[in-house]
Image (cartoon, rainbow, N blue to C red; front, side):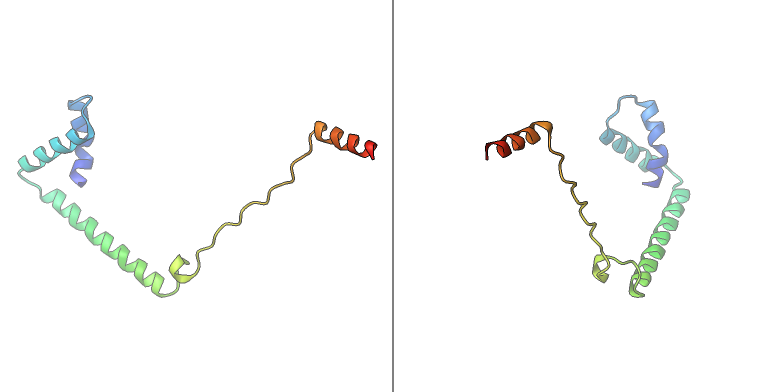
Length: 103
């Protein structure tokens, strides 16, 4: 996927109007035909290690009470904003005045 992300624009430039699925298909064809993949495999291994390190750090952080997520009871819901009372229109006020006069 790292290689495809870097090659996507080139594939699209060479094939204007190509669909997303076709970009992936062409990318797969180019990848299979590529002889030396060591650069990209090394980048993929580095990315996988970084993800593992991140996941481990998140677990440690949450185990130490951090995060405030729903599991820790720290998820807060936002209070709904209070509605301002609607202003009465001039028509409503005149109706009330008429009611007062009839009494």
